Length: 507
Ligand code: C2O
Picture 1 (tube, protein in one colour):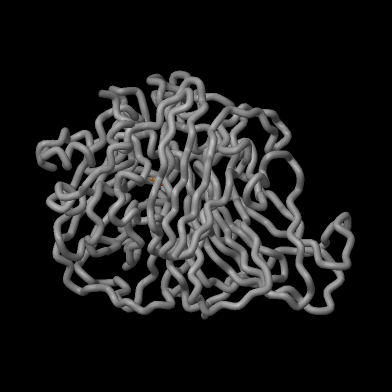
Picture 2 (tube, rainbow, N blue to C red):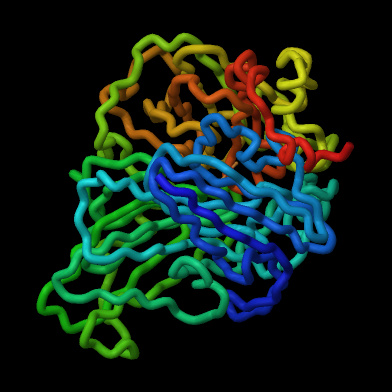
């Protein structure tokens, strides 16, 4: 194990990712930002200097569990105070305990769709797969609105015309495929080079604030070897990969032999999932797969395997993908938590609100004292204001039964601090283990919960800290679709929080 150090600097820059210039907040002037890469067991030290003149910031290393370092999880009001504007800095120090592909992003206000985002790669030296080369492939939506008003659009109380319906989030202006760090800085069609007969690992990351995609490469099946930070057994190949905000897949692609053409890589939005059918959500973007020996200017004539729209609004069949390291689910959990989540039109507030068991999380109260510090300082979980949507988790196996029948919309739900077991999506009500898959179920950290469904997932408490649990559609999070799990509060009280983490908070 080694120490891996990065020096990052955040500032505003105007770039044109889709041909329209936009002021973005960028780390080291790159969009996506620098790749954080380390091996299992390394100690990572990322020092971020915030040179924004007007706003704080924070970085969340999505999927990194932060075992023993919960103050490095990067969520304002949950486990850190923001890094101050005008040169404030903080060093995120942690040791990754799971391998695969992920990303990091700001968890401060709308900074994530403003560009504070980049790839994370954790290598596992004992991994069995062999390949000749690898590419990071970022798929994302993109908004032309360049300032902080992006997330204010659906937060300003009022109705659209005289409809009595509050404003909805804006639709993206473009969708992009980019080749990792710096790959979206300018509007240039990305091109991925294939040499005939070689095997490529693609690390596909959905960095969208809002939309999911069907990803595919014409005439090339994708062999699944990783979902989020869970290594898969590699037995499943797909022609089309549904990928939702914050999800990642690692796939192997076999380049054809004796092939003298180029083909398209495609990313097509899944519009049918959105309650309001917006033609602006019908977006497709392509990148070139350029075979060695073929001119990069040769336009492919390749066709997709099937119409991506035919499977609109569906996630991968989870029973198809099994983790490489077998672990069956505990049949009788120690605690079961029921959460009813959804969006609804609050006529009094004249806003769309996201609620979890009837309580909307007031997102972006970024300067509140973090829950982690409250618990460490002796506050009881039961004494926290109900608006914090906090649930205490004690020792054992926790099962969460999450129901989306409250309102329209499908939600890519993400839990911090764990790669959990996805036991199933039920159409009807929950009856114990009925209809669940307890045999080596898929593990991931972001699951797509369909409209009108019940999702069941499970994990063991082993990570003292405050785990944010929220919809990863940035607008839905901002509308209040979030809660927090205070995991092992008695252990949190024994933690030694470093002075530099405490010192970010106002005195
Ligand atoms: Cu990508 Cu709260 O997470």
